[in-house]
Image (cartoon, rainbow over the protein chains, first blue to last red):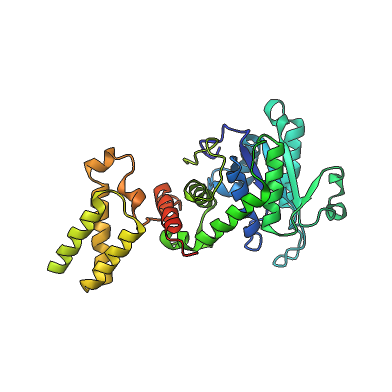
Length: 221
Length: 100
């Protein structure tokens, strides 16, 4: 396991399965922001660097610890660097759906949000998902926030502010980020996943316009 | 040397209440310029005093140790992670110092 003290709170853990490239990072950060602002805890393979675990073991641990999962399959396509398609997101989605379906007890409660840039595109490359609701974000961080907020509201947190309100908080956070990074003496792309979570958590505690579902999480990592 | 001592006294006074605000930080930087101290030397004095206060027995009992209020975040403490207090401090300074 990752050693995260919140790992036991599986109902609040949200497993994020998404690309880790620079182009996608604004959407990922928006998703992480929305999760934290709604009082949940983002979990992702980037949070651990335990070399004794295989990547598959890490994924299994994270999926086991998370009652909720957000899967973005928008970057399925030919990787311009390697010339072959990327299957990791679909693989992790399949693993998550399998865990939800077959594992006994707690994991049967797993709920899933599948995101794509275009809501109907999946039929062309993963038609087995037919019947699942695919939420569209159009490659826009603000749209991703709204989708994540709606998903979390439907799965355990009925009292949340609207998506636009959370979006405005996220935009304020982005305006503060250059100064935050300056004081930390670090570049944006050098922040680790856990540091970003901490930064967002602190900002939600300190910024006057931030909502944050306080009392649900303390962000005391 | 006398200028450095005066500067160190001022910094200690600022640190005494355990709350270094952005305005106080600007004051410290302005004072260093007024005294025509070498910026690197001034920074070293501030950091030394900061860590001396943080390491003092009083700081151990303080529910909000100096480091949380410090303007000198110390990144990369252990396995590439930044200390929570450094992040809190940076966020606080950024929010306090908004220009928009």
